[in-house]
Image (cartoon, rainbow, N blue to C red; front, top):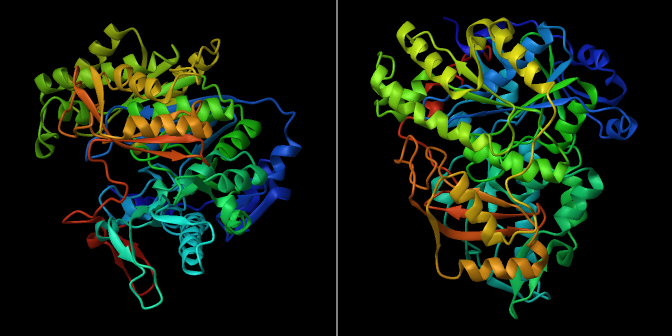
Length: 552
């Protein structure tokens, strides 16, 4: 079978100018070469009176090291909707170079359900990640320079909250010392990956350029020696950071392998950030299409919860349908099968592992009744395994469809598309998990007990006091963005399946005052990932003519 990159290279795409013209976006298009382009934000002002389309969220069961194909299913569903004659656009996150060269690989789908051109999107794309990295580190440089130049704001060097960043997995940068030159001011510092920065979250939640600048100015970067909060507006660099991000704020237009429009914009991780593509891209898609397919990172306990409790209330979005993606391989994994044995039939483990799907379904029903389960089929799935899954799904009282988008593109997702259309035409009954008026501590415990199924939450010393301080700084009505392992409902990656009645451990909290949510660090989650012993970059090759092999 052809690799993803071979399939992508064989595709003869539409010129981006042709695609934009079809969408009546040609006067708003800023081409980045032949296949990519950015859309000017004035399009939203000019289309503000247009009615919005239906919003479809694709999420997943708890992820495994093999991947469940959530992005692939989102793209396949979009292609299927277009194949059925509906006007549909897929809106996805941008890939991060960390996973691309690490263990996860690219994030442009796979097989015959991809966005094009996959190599360019997975690498530098239109430069958004580089702009975010530069803006984030410019703020760090401004902080250190202010201290060096006399420290008029009396910044407490032991209470600087803003970290430097890099869009590459590099564990050696987690804890470092800076300012060791003769003219430097030595202090301890740390790096996070670019997709975990507050600036990434701000970019994805901003309504327009004015809102972007406002949010950047509101970033809490440090406290002074008297314990007073200091914001970016105090440094007077909000305009400079906004200038670096003015083009990055514009959504990116590309296409699927079936020539359908795709908006790829923003890329926060769901295990350490809010895991959704930009609000601007989603709003643009809703103005230009009858149906919009989007996805939220990792399992529904992370990405979907944050989409439904952070992005939707802030952006006034009301998803019409949730698609819950699963694979037979992942269910066997949650039933105790080792990675090396997953391609072998194991009905007992499959039966046991289906508890993970049931738990995710239980969670999503707390937001809406309009849910479709997508079974992402693999060639290794046996007839008996498929029959067992269908019997279980029939007893769950939920709509479901088997999907072959990876091998057949949109044609392999037609059944899924028909079930989604059926649910989308019902009356919207979405509602968030908690009201914004609840205290931050109550919100944390609401998510922990109802979505993670924990019996209680314990806080390290000083965390509860921090939460009260954040509320005094105006954050009481902010949602919580929980950072934890993606592999388990709990904060312990080894607790697979459907663990219940455990204790969640809050290690620390951080006020993202610009993004307008509170980050809650649970367990031993890292904001700067490391590389594995055999990272993906070791399998990559490039010929003298620039042909790439082994990528993604």
